[in-house]
Image 1: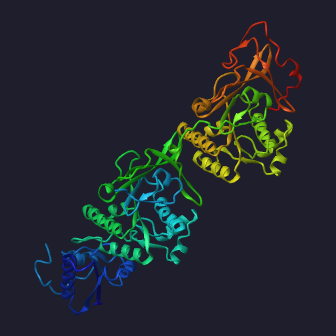
Image 2 (image 1 turned 30 degrees about the vertical axis):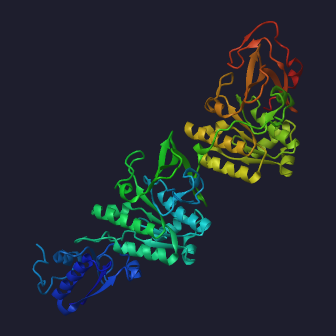
Length: 102
Length: 503
């Protein structure tokens, strides 16, 4: 399986940013060693947001995939994130059973 | 607390807003599709750069950055150069070709805010335009989030000392202010741009709906969009209809007519000459110009009915040398085709000609030709703007108006504008015993006595000759003649044979 590299854009360190970062950590964990992510705080690096033309935070990009592989929000529903990003099914279950949603 | 205003630098808009937009406030520019919202938003920044040395950030939610650079070049705004010079920054928030990304969970516009803030700081912007917020609302259904976030962004920008203009779309010209209620939460001020169909003609107007706490002029003002300029507002209702105040007289160019007016026209008065086709209106204009030339004045003629060459030939036939007057640069003939553009554009063009040539007298031949290309309201506004501009510059004006019928009657033109002019001169045909004769009367002359007799006049190779009053004919002005046997035939008896048809 190809590597999955995510980039998460957040604005500052508020609860919404933390929720999104936590969601992405669980997402990567479910894909094991093939998945990784980096975190961009747009208040610290606005040019990164400018280059990627990000408006909303949090925004999750699947790196190297173009704008169509992008979701917005705190990613509270990981099953929907996987579907929206067109990812293969996760090899392991998500760490917390409350996170997967219905 | 008085609100400090920031001159926008947009022609006319600073007049109707009485000084510009309130500084460090957010102003909504609302309008239907095609109402020139984007032009306004770009111009707000362009004027800041060109006239006030204030840099700007343009946030586009709708058009691509490349399209804006291209589309605005025609207005003389070289955005790409300003970007290179660090005076203009784009924040590209236009929709992605792939459509909006799916939303999963809560979000805010933190990245947009960070990008705008960064651009503002980086180029030291004092002005920010956001165009158009509707695009966001169309793409995302979380409208309450968008509203709260846009409020947060504008508040932040205001605290940074920035004056904000943002555009929003309306669906009706006289309906709700915007589709998504933007005005209620983001705007301190609201300006509405309209693009109406008035009497089968496009009519653009701008109205300042509110300027929170600051005075401004009320009502709709026409504007036009011009190459190399953008939006040009005509601050018409701001003009006062002043009556002529000068007591100085100038010649009409016809000695006998001067006598009928008790010494000529007033220096700053507007005279309307009304008559049927062929009565000699253009001749009177020619003599008005020639009279000015001989008195050492500068004369400007706006011709809407005949070409310059035709006018020069006509003048020659009456014994006046337009060519020489032009060579000495004291006559300028501006020849325009009435239908070539809107009356608002004609007005702006004409005022610019007046500004550049600095005439002491101006003739418009004819007003009727201009009336045909606009609505009644547009026409009245034109006449008000023109007369008040001439008066404030102490320019004598002569406008002609063509009556519909050959005999008697008034023209539509004079019915609508007679109160706007200082003097009215009537030229009428008189049918008497199988012959057409011509009659002239001074109907009104503000601020002066004038002759009340109706005189006969003739036209020959030396121009107009005014003779004795008509006697024994009544009903000349109405075109329904009745005669009494006593006085017929005097007046022009001796000069009949010179009468030519060059009028």
